[in-house]
Image (cartoon, rainbow, N blue to C red; front, side, top):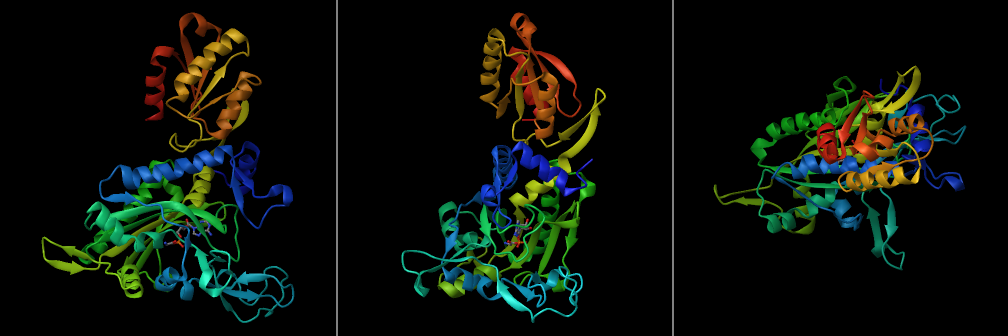
Length: 436
Ligand code: GAP
């Protein structure tokens, strides 16, 4: 069963090295987090799985890695300087600060209970401002990107010229984004520094409705394909008053978090807003000339915009399970093999030297293909429990018989079933079980 309490997964992640509070030895730093040895690998796997689906397995999307720092001109054109704000109120009694739109009751302070104690709402811009270069004057102002999207719009003509793609085609990007969130919350769900995975898919205007529907279905299917049960996912269309300043239609992929349904990804029909804005502000042509029809047009954009770090939280919460094996309770992360940090653990039954040599040989064979762990500490039972708890799909046990029969035992995390396999067939067996 998926985690019902956030703490079950937060504690496991801290203990096993998935996610640590940032700068913890100094008391932590304002809802920022560091991804530990397992978390760093899983985050890469989440992004790789996204790039695989969005770029590798199709021929109409290319990858980009744009700068994080950008000049004000980009954010003026995108509308972020004017519109990327949250309404902020302060409680005059306890001095705490809240987002007005997130308050259950706009007259009651959720912190101290005071009535009608809020100041007038102020628009608070969420972008982090800094200075590029040694002089901190107005001419040196730069912003950390609050989304990866704009790097793809400003490179539209570059990508078009470099790749000779024609609509419908997309530009995909993963990477860090920064928002000075007033109320970061729920662990890595909403943080000030996070990672996104965004696709800008440029289409002929007449095809935008059809591509919007296509991407909604495609993106929901991505989460299911990576192991999140269907009943923990839903697609929710935004009401008109929820739409962003650029969007003519948005649907969210939502996940049933322990605190209720919440957003994993937004799929927006952005029309020609972004390319038109950047063309007007930069003076560059950002359109497409279709030689076949002789028509020049500004493509419309369908944007599936997901969060890599937020999605990682959802994958972990969905994978969390507790069951009983041989009368003993265990915690198991039933992560999809593509997402699991280690695919295989190689476990020698004993630390004795002649067995270690064989086990190291098996480890080298396996690790060349799959990211693998080698563990020869403690009893074999405890090592299985540890690998179950960190989500390793397969364990390969090297025992004393292995020295004679050149075979090992492969144990499945989910069923705990074990099969004896000749070392010569090991890679083929692992591939069949993992699916890649
Ligand atoms: N380009 C459109 C865009 O950025 P968004 O809905 O603001 O849209 C897309 O962000 C996704 O990025 C969200 O669905 C969420 O998964 C992730 N995201 C946004 N803000 C976040 C935050 N403060 N912390 C973690 N993830 C965040």
